[in-house]
Image 1 (cartoon, rainbow, N blue to C red):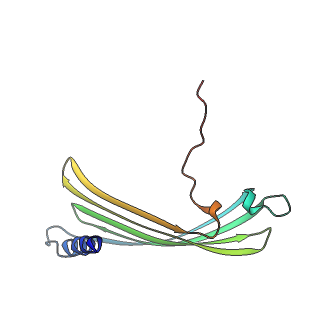
Image 2 (image 1 turned 45 degrees about the vertical axis):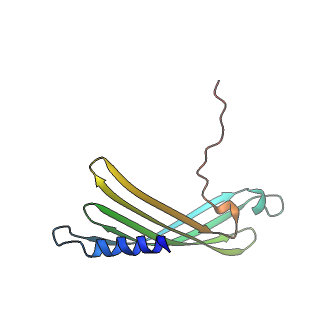
Image 3 (image 1 turned 30 degrees about the vertical axis):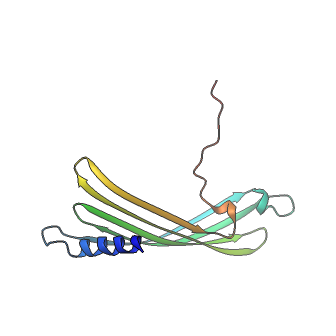
Amino acid sequence: MHLRTCTVGWVVAVLAAPAAAAVDLTPRLSLQVEERYDDAALLQVGGAGQLITQVSPKVALELATPVQEAKGFYAADLLLHHGSGQLTVDHRFGAQAKERLSPRAEVSLKAQGWRVGDPTSLPRTVLSAVPIP
């Protein structure tokens, strides 16, 4: 309940900003198309990997004042697995907020989520361990 109150309070503060502190509201639409070969064990058909076509429409909204920023997005990932002919839909969403308290200090919050049917489609943001001689 506290998070909802803070979020509502932040939105009200931004929308009620004085005319001198103009609010910049920017909607964004994008479409990403990707073709890749994946040989992950969970995707193998007959012992071989398969081509995957991914189409990802994304809608985002950005809100900014001189001291506050907020961003949010939703994207649906349509994945066509050529080897099996299977079509799956994954969902990604996220939000980010930032407030500048002074020229040297700011508070920020970032949250992202994924709802996927195939764990190999999650973002791989970790680098492999490489021994250093």
